[in-house]
Every structure is written in structure tokens, then in C-alpha cells.
Image 1 (cartoon, rainbow, N blue to C red):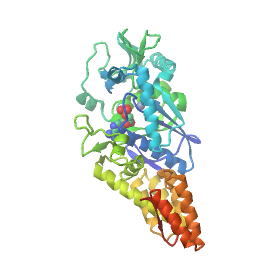
Image 2: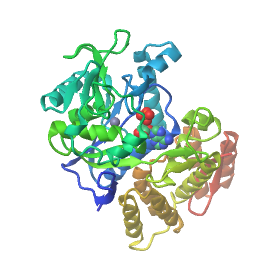
Image 3: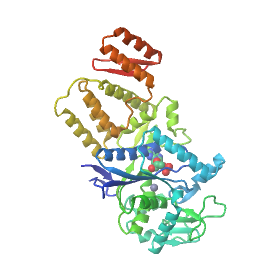
Length: 452
Ligand code: AMP
Ligand code: ZN
């Protein structure tokens, strides 16, 4: 049984998809700058869910949006247009900005070995669908027009606020620029009527304009996944406004609850606080690399905390993750050629423990502990193969593809020579390997290669 915490019902519930494929929507990046490691936590979370479901035998049908339309800096329809700011900063058109940072995003997810959704949908590719969706909301009486744009009428949607808490609370917290024409100050924009100078704009039944930023997620979800979506993911920051608005839009148009499980990942903090420009601690994978940490070390770091808890990033902590991952890999490889036969039932015991951990709302710290315990068993290739199986969820590269092919071949030859008791040859190859910058460490059961 798989259990996930559902932010909507505020409890752990058994997860069963509507159909034979799991339909999953993930809020994607706004492509105006380099994604930082906090963003990457959100995508590792997406990866985590996808891999766990696949491990359980489900097929996935997932989608992630790319916000490549300028929207306003804050969720509450105010502030500056992020794409426009970037475009001025870099003297490029918003389209060029979007293209560049979409590529960066794809590259970063690849570096982290993130299992990407089946569909990747830029907002600009669904403008027609957005217009139809908004028309549908107007027809059904959920939206109205002002001189500034088309707004969603939250008074028409009694469920408003069920995800993030009371609307009142939000009213107290949010700074809202009151627009006289709005029925309720918390009505949010679906379509913005664009001033002439606005760069990104499209023709619509309401004149030239561009979409409000919540609408793309409802539209992309509907277009690619349909009216019943099993899981929707995002960071906790999206819970109170963005996802509340998505629910209002989608459920109103479809006439029923669209998303069953809302899953939110807590924030990554840095040095115990929020990442900020002024503190200069908004790190990217390249920043980590410059200090000697691989993307994989960050992947291991991700597994060290439960997604529902804030996680604190420090260089000391990532150093710890790096050391643990290194020890983990060495231990895994030390089982590769292990000759021992595990007692009956041992494999099943670990398989069950691992599955129980991951299926209990993605308890990755516990899943890692199961692996650690398994690795303490006598050297056996059975352990190696079981870890390989678990690695479908973990997503590490045990074989060190970074190792040059020639070094791997030499190591095999040397192992063979040693088995043949041709020690002179084995030693000669060992020296050759060392000259290439690697050391071979032997045990009774096999060898591991490490950087010298
Ligand atoms: P954005 O591009 O700003 O829309 O953010 C992309 C994703 O990263 C969203 O799902 C955010 O909720 C998430 N996110 C932003 N900052 C953090 C953080 N510090 N920790 C975890 N997730 C974050
Ligand atoms: Zn979204």
C-alpha cells in the first residue's frame, strides 16, 4: 500500500490512481534565471514520487509546465514582470531569455538524473487553449471582464481557501492593490489586457493581451492529463495562492474536483535562513561544483531529510552527504563480485523494508538506512543486485561512468590476472592504472576503483 500526505485533506491517505497510468502535474520553473538548489529540491521531489510509483509498477503520465510568459513577481498579481526584468538585464528579447533558461533548466535536471515527465509544456505553446479555458469560465459565470482584464470571481467558488487555509488569513497577510472594478479584492486575473508597449502579447476575444500566471497550470493539466489528475506537486510557497487559484479555475470549469492529491515540498534553507541575494547564498549546481561537490552529492543530500520538513543547506552538510555517498558507493561496489550466498529470506526482508519505507510517504532517510544495513551483510553479489534494484528509486551512478573506459578494462584484466595467479602481470597493470590516476582496492570478494 502506498501512502502519501495529501495537503488538501491534511492527512496521509492511501494512494490509488484513477486509471492505469498515474496522471501527475508538476509546477515548473519560470525561465528567467538560473535555477538554484532550492528549486532543484522541488524537482528532486517530483523525481522521487515518479521513481517510487514506477518502482511499484505504475506507468506514469506526467507533465511539467515551463512559465515562459512574463507574469508579475508576486503571486498576488502585483510587482514587476520577471521576464521583462531579465530581458532588460540581459539585453535580449523575452523569447530569447525563455529559450536560454529553458535549456539551462533541462541541463540542470539532467545533471541531477531527474526522471522528467512525459510532457514538457511551455505556457506560450498553449495560448489558444488558455483563451478557450477562460471563455469557458466566463460562459459558466465564474469570470468577468473589467477594463484591465478578465478576472476570476472567487465569491462564485465556495471552496476557495480549502488548501491554504482561510481566505481571511490571506487577506490579512497580503498587500493588495485595490482595483475598484474587481468584485472582491482577492479576485485574480485570468487574462491581462496588454498595454501597447508590452512585448509578449496575443490576440484574444478581449483584445491584445497575455495570460495571468495561474491559468497556464490549469490549462496544461487539462490539456495533457484530462479532468482527473492523481497528483499535483509544487513547493509550499505555491500552496496558499497559486494552487488555491488553480483549484478554483479547474474545478469550476470541470464541475468537479480535478486533483486528488496535492503534494508539497518544504523549502530548502541556506545557513538556517532564506536564500537571498543580499546574503549571496543563492547557490546553483555550478556553485556547488566550484567547491568540489557533484550534482549527485546534492541528490544524496536531498534524501537525508523528509520532503515535508525544511532542510538546511550548509557546506558542512553537503560535505557530509558527499562522504556518505562515497562510502555508500564503495560499499556497493565491494559486493559486486562477492561470492557469499545470503540466507533464505534475507533478500525478501530487505526488499520489504525498503518498499515499506518509500511507500510510507517517501520516507527516504529510512530507505537509506535500510540500504546501509543491507550493505553490512557478507560480501555477496546478491546484495549488489538488490541495491541496483533499489537504485531505480535512488538514481545514483554506482558504476562511476566518470571512470575512463580504459581504466575499467585494465581493472578487469588485472582482476583476471590475479585470479590466474599471474601476480607479476596484475602488479604491472596496477601500476598502469595508478599512472592514469586511479587506485584499485582489493578484498577477498572483489575490487573497487577509486581516484588516486
Ligand atoms: P519558480 O521558478 O520560482 O516558480 O520555482 C520553481 C519551483 O521551485 C516551485 O515549485 C517552487 O515552489 C520551488 N522552490 C522555490 N524556492 C524553493 C526552496 N528554497 N526550496 C524548495 N523549493 C523551492
Ligand atoms: Zn503551477
